[in-house]
Length: 255
Image (cartoon, rainbow, N blue to C red; front, side, top):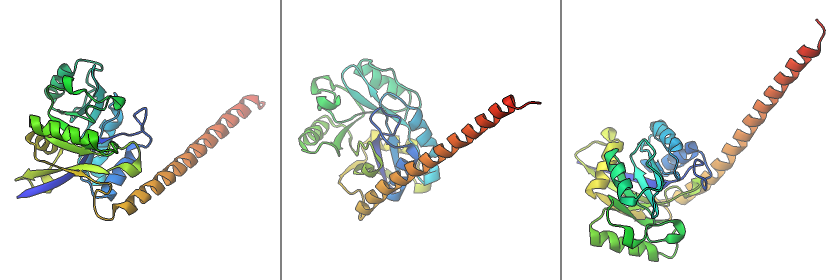
C-alpha cells in the first residue's frame, strides 16, 4: 500500500516581516486546491507556524510546524521543530540543532545570494535541498540546485515560497509513503518521508488540474477576509468608544 501526500513545505504568513496573510487563509487555500499540508516557515519567528500546525486538522490538513531561520551564511528551513533555533549561528551547528529537536534541515533557494541562499562553498551538510522554488523565474538557480542535490544524494523538495494566499501550492512536494493508510499519516510520517528521499517535485504554476480558478478564489477570499476583519475591528472600536463614553458620563453625572 502506498499513499501520496502533497505538501508545500515553504510558506510565509503575516508572522513574517514580508508575509501578508493570516494562517487561517493559507490553510483554507491549501485545502481548497487539494494539498495535504503546508509548513508555515516565517522568518526567524515560529509562533504563527505553531498555531497553523494546531489548526491544520480543522481544515483536513496535516499539521507540521517550522521556521526559516537565519544562519551565519544564509537561510535554512527547520521543518518539524516546535522551538525557535538559535539565530545567526553557524550552519553546521544549526543543522545539528534541528536534528536534535526532531526536525529536518532543508536548504531553501540555495546559491541565490539576493535572497540569502546559502553559497555552495558553505553547503556541506543538510537533510534535503529545495530544488524548485516557484519564485526563481529564470530556472537557472533551480537547475543548479537540482544538479547539486543529485550529485550529493540529497532528497529534493519543491515549494512555493508563498508570501500571500494566491501563491500557495504553486510548487509543492509529493511524498510517497509505504505501508501507512492516509488516515494514520501525521507530521512525523512527512518528516520520515523527507529523510528517506521518498519525494517527487511538482514545480508547476497550477498544483492540481483547474487550480487556476482557485487562485482567483484565494484572492477574493483574501479581500473578503480583510473586509470582515475591518468591520469587526470597527465594531469593537465602536463598542469600546461607547463604553468609554458611558463611563465618562457616569463620572460627570450628579449622584
